[in-house]
Image (cartoon, rainbow, N blue to C red; front, side, top):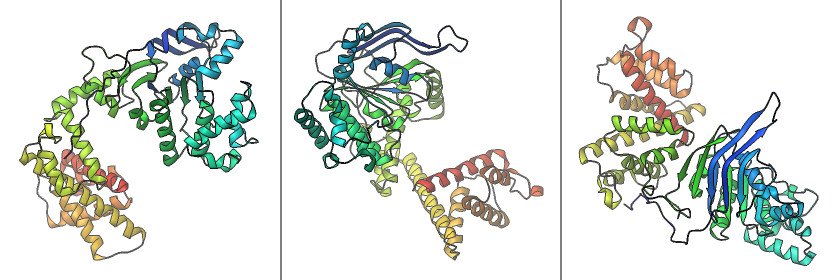
Length: 450
């Protein structure tokens, strides 16, 4: 099996000066009024040429506020912001116009295309204000439309296009003046999954091929792997910075910081967690697991491949016991055998649940439906250390059928397992009731996504 791990990549490029620097930057809304609000406070921030930076966090955390400071439309209340060594808020109107035309470009969540203009004219529009003649600006616009695969829409009006097409046209417009920095304010927030990938891949190409500095605002953790670095924002401040080990780094990494710590790895799994919460998760992982976090990470990738059908279930065991240096997970054979059995059990039971639900929705009731429920019951009771009677088995199968069909909730099933005989329960006790009911929920969750 091919190695699954990656190391932190450090660029061999000559170290450049930061293209953006912020120091003690604050933005306060409604200064001096009763509803005065501190929206942004950034102590230190540096972004380097050709970096792909993501400002990440929930709504209202200050990420868009910071982005619009970079754009030159939101003056900081205090502190220092330098772009290419200069404070844009000290520019006169002509200098600011040049800055917003040639230094920064922006893509919005709303496409902001003019519905009465053709696609070609929308893209070429910024060059009208730069006094380009018509043929020159249309030639530049057409080159960009061809590059991003929307040249066939050049003569159409934006209202006839899909969201993904409109956003790629918006990207083309943002690049027509060849800015050094491209800003994106939730540019895929209104798009479906296919269009989102197309636009995100386009931004990646702008960063890698055009060598533009890209700064993206998002609250979607799926986008984090695109970035060189991520600034996690919370309540108006930068809570932490995370380096992406899968991209060549442009910013110089301090000595001792080139190895991704377990806390940083956890940050990728729990992007909204605070630094303190990540430290707690790290300690809990240490005291509850007898395998390393690196092994867990590889195991997650292996299970993902298995769920996608890209790794046969019979090959899972080989991957589990293979040496870590060879790309395996290096689990002892006996333990690996148990793990394989659990994985096979979960996937088999999840398939049974999915098939049971499908047949029930089609009002098909056959003996195979009963067998599916029995298989799930057997898989669950393999976990149980106590004894059951034939009557218990029948009652349990009835309740499993009700739960996977959605007629009862998880709490009702757990109480059924926990309660005594006088309450028509199985008297399994609180511990086993919790273990088995949670296990059934895991099977149901897997069935939903198969």
